[in-house]
Amino acid sequence: MPGHTRDYYKVLQVDPEADPEVIAAAYRRLSLKYHPDTNPAADATRRMQEINEAYDVLKDPAKRADYDLARRAQASSYGRDEAGRRAEGPEPAAARHAPNPVQPGFHAFRNVPRGAKTVKAFAAEPVYCHSNPPQEHVLPGGCWIDLGFEWVARDVVTLTTTWRALNIAVTVDGVPVSRSQWEVKGPNAIALPGAQGPRYGYVVADALYLPALPPGDHVVTWTVSFARDVDDGWALHPRGSELVVTSLLHIGKDDRAG
Image 1 (cartoon, rainbow, N blue to C red):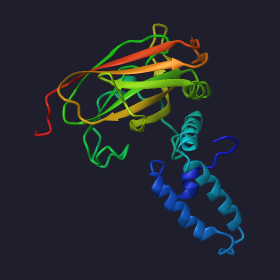
Image 2 (image 1 turned 90 degrees about the horizontal axis):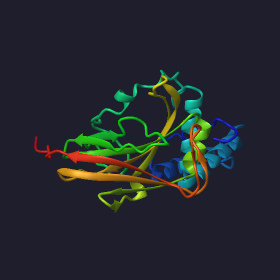
Image 3 (image 1 turned 90 degrees about the vertical axis):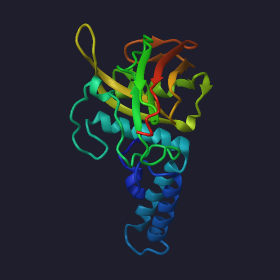
Image 4 (image 1 turned 30 degrees about the vertical axis):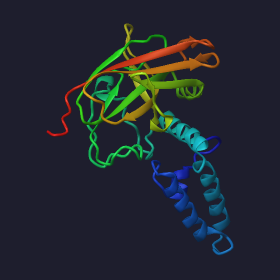
């Protein structure tokens, strides 16, 4: 949110996860209420300008994605969550990455059935930018899977700058995954384990939601290519290089009947 702290979602009175149709409907409703041609209030013009500014950003998918990333970064940099509460410190990595069935009512993408059982399969530890450890996960069958590739940097500014410079492609068993199934999560403060003690930094992740996979072994590959030199705050990744991160999934027998 360059230059100011205005929350466009609050301006339009919608949830940050609202679908585009909900945002458009909110804009139409507020425009009718606050347009200075029909509203004699002294602050009607100012309110209408804020409404137009918010809608100009949130109606455009690319602008909205950039805004959401900056909004989360600002919340993290001030040590507060998006509701303005004081954040409690980083959750231990082991707890943060443990499989976590989501409660009914979970909503991430419109193609994830509401109330569907979902388990997480993020990397056991954040992916260090200078290494490529394979990650192995055993998951129950019959559920949607929330997979993630995570990028770590020393500070929020560096993290958000470098994240935008990454070109990321994802395949599942060699089949490309549509970007519409992806979601950017973070930045979140974390502690990285190390031989000399923990290093503190921030992480942002690409998560993708997959419907239930058949029982057996599956390979999920993130291919990250660098269009220019990228510095994560600890290591430099030169233009033209490539980082391949692989998650190996073993899906158990379908448990939907149980």
